[in-house]
Amino acid sequence: MTTVAAYAAPRAKAPLERTTIERRPVGEFDILIDIKFAGICHSDIHQARDGWGEGIFPMVPGHEIAGIVAETGSGVTRFKVGDRVGVGCMVDSCGQCDACLMGREQHCAEGNTQTYNALDRSGEPTYGGYSTHLVVTEKFAVTIPEGIALDEAAPLLCAGITTYSPLKRWGAGPGKKVAVVGLGGLGHMAVKIAHALGAEVTVLSQSLRKKDDGLKLGADHYYATSDPKTFEELAGTFDVILSTVSAPLDFGAYLGLLRTEGTLVNVGAPEEPISLNLFSLILGNRSIAGSAIGGIKETQEMLDFCAVHGLGAEIEVIDASQVNEAYERVLASDVRYRFVIDTATV
Image (tube, rainbow, N blue to C red; front, top):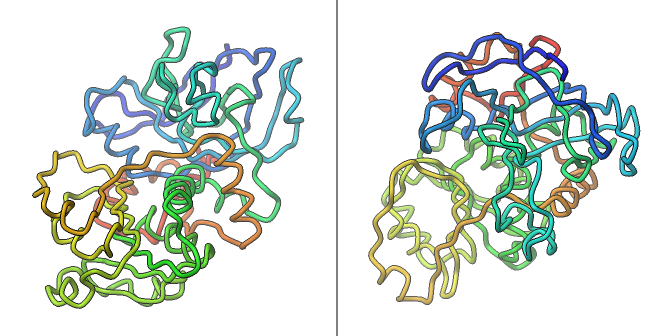
């Protein structure tokens, strides 16, 4: 075992504090990653504060990890020391079920092993990227292309794949009209990716405060959802609506913005249950769907796509000691658009 520095929540809703954790020895098919940057995802806050159910504490959040390979196991073939690598929301799966064999490890029948707030296959708790080093099996690491800076790449391991996967699955591209609900950590990447895919992109945000940003990121149109006229003007407009917000929405109103057979896809995960009048779906053959992250192969595809198109996250790099302040600023929507921890400061 190796002792490394980390920032952890000692208990639910408690401020994160500097501590040390144990990383397992590097096994035959493992790599040791010298973490350089770790993004702060809204889901880190949900879990550190027990918003999605009872967590495992102490908890070291962080599933947007970018770093350099520092050591490899004897059986490792995909990476060598010095390679630029990333780790996202999961670090293992059974590898044998239908989902895993199809490259959809995120839907592993036995449950994938989350990067943090989970138990690994030996029953030990997993700890995330708010730390200096990580040991992971090579199958769950991806290559970060040279065309993306490591700090801008870190958020792609969650925010990038979480938006890329549904946009690809539901056919965002030339001739399609895509709306992105919310221009935050997920939403800003959704706009960049949908634009790069060739879709006509509209941002639906509570206000016009970020309109200039949205247009610079690649949006063609920008509307305030606080204005009731928005829902009248845009009725029946979109092929796909991608909701990236964690707040509950008036789903009936948003479904009314879809064309016939359009789909509202949710990647934001509100803590509260929703209610829905099913006529919002029945009339117009509309659908409401959810999407998780992507598998490892698709995550690599996303990174390669972002490198080709020059896409990285819009970030604010912070010292690890600022993490609690950053959490409050995320909740206040006071970040443009992703905090990234410089793990040299952990």
